[in-house]
Amino acid sequence: MRLNNKVAIITGATGGIGEATAWRFLDEGARVMLVGRSTDKLSALVERLDGGDSVAHAVAEAGDEQANATAIAACVERFGGLDIMLANAGTEGSVLPLEDQSLEDFEALLRTNVLGVWLSIKHSVEPMRQRGGGSIIALGSIVSVIGSPGLLPYIASKHAVAGMLKTAAVELGEANIRVNAIGPGPIQNRMIDSIFEQAAGDGEVDAATMADGMREAIPLKRFGRNEEVANLALFLASDESSYCSGGIHMIDGGFTAA
Image (cartoon, rainbow, N blue to C red; front, side, top):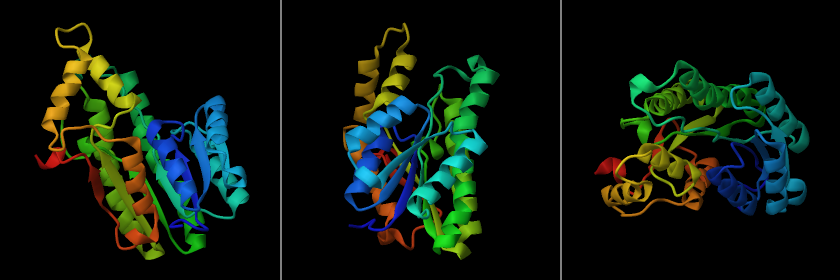
């Protein structure tokens, strides 16, 4: 029970990585507050998890400061504190050349992927201080450290996550609050499907062919699974990673090493 007596919040909880991590955290003894945008999806997830009194949920848009603060306060009231924040909420946005990206879409993506992570960090600090420390984990990406055509807003947001976690790790170290990011490569879930489908559009190369090409570029020759990302989140949430802070921990099958 690596998370016994720990309290965790997972934002973007109804997505593939969020749900897989919720299962993993509960299995390891945590009490979990699930945060997302849809009451119906959150209620359905709570039912699937069947975690009894160890699971609760709160509705919040990632970029809404008051909603985030309220969700964290509700977690503290329900479970008595906060030890782990997984800032997982995110969106891929549009796959378009940079000159075709709209200002409105770019701003909306930054609100979710950048301001949402910042708000999760910001409002976790005080309850974690009261517990004597904690672990904050942000969802970065392989594109936190590389570029790729067609995804400029998304890539800009994930580079921003890298900067935020490093700064937060430096600022919060004295409070025994560790801050890290996970850098997934292609993971077999809704987001990667959306990216390939958008990139294919009405072109000559279809989404499946694009996906096959990406697999060939990965040294392990496959996409990752949501459960594998959840396992890395578990390590960073647990005391096993007690000297890890300020890092982007890649889980990409060797893609960024190739």
